[in-house]
Every structure is written in structure tokens, then in C-alpha cells.
Length: 115
Length: 112
Image (cartoon, rainbow over all chains, first blue to last red; front, side, top):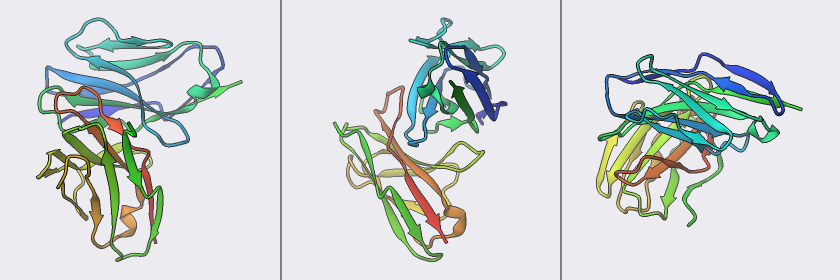
């Protein structure tokens, strides 16, 4: 079974600074996806970034980047130049690549960006 | 494209009542799923479907039924609501080989 652990229930960061959210996971699969989703107060689930486990290069999307350590089963999210609009709940999730019928989510980290 | 739509946005039920949460997508996605979100637990899979006429159970299926008569629609039925089903419900869809799931806006359900 796959599990995802987010050890930081809440974090805060000053506007324009950098923050890193932690995520560790456990899986017996060799091929899988890892995701970070953002959930703002509107409750909409928004995909932030995706990483394929077979890719060694860390994924990057504008101000968002990941540090993917496959051997350590770690998948942290770095947000650079934090903005007030980044305030949200962030979920780490994983899914099998083949016949992956279930996204497994962590419990989430609340991020507050302060002005 | 409207994407994934869900109705209603918010619903209050009394214990024992039944209701159907609606989910529709206009992206011709084969795969659809229902999740519930509870505080401190992230999202958990209730039921999913890999195509019209095919459904299967997820992690927390008890108390919920689904059917998939068309590619577009995937309703979730609560036959006899219980307070433990108070939650926020999300519908999601993707193509069979798709890497990313697209989520609806969610339905907040309160069972008294």
C-alpha cells in the first residue's frame, strides 16, 4: 500500500521569501507519479507540480520546484518569492503509473504567507 | 470546456435521508472518481470508474453507491445519510493514460 506523510501541519512565510514544504512517501512501486496540489480557501484543488518517478531531473513550474529524492522517498516543494496568493492548504499525493486508480494524499500543510 | 462540475455546492441533510451528489465532465475522460476530504486526513477515494458501465470501490466505500451510465456523468448516492458522512466531496476525472486528475469545485455536505 502507498502512504504519504506531511509532517508540517502549518507553516508561515514572509512575502517574497522562500519556503519548503516536506513530504515523504512509501510505495512498493517502481513507476509512479508524485504531485503537489494547492487548495485555497475556495476549496478548489489546483495542480501545482507533477513529477514522474523515472525522471531524475526535478520538476519546475515557475516559482515552484521540487526536490525529489527517490531513494529516500522524499518529495519536497519549494516556493520561491512567496506571494499572498500562495496562502493555501498544500497536499502531497502519489499514484501508480500503471493502472493507477487511486491518488493517495497526505494530510496537508497549511501555508500562510504574511505581508 | 466547463471541466468537472459538481452540484450542489452545499447541502444539509438529516440523518437517514438520501441524496445524490452530481458530477459531470465534458472532456471525454474515461476515468472518474469520488473523494471525500476530512480534516487532518487529506482526500480519500470512495469509488471510481474506468469507463461507462464499470465501477469499483475505493478506500472508504461504505454508505455510498455509484453508477456510470454515460461517459460524462458519475453520480454519488447516499442511501441513508449518517453524521459520519459530513464532509467535503470532490469528483475528479482524467483520461485512461492521463498523468493528472482534474477536480471539480467540491460539494460540502452536512448531516445533522
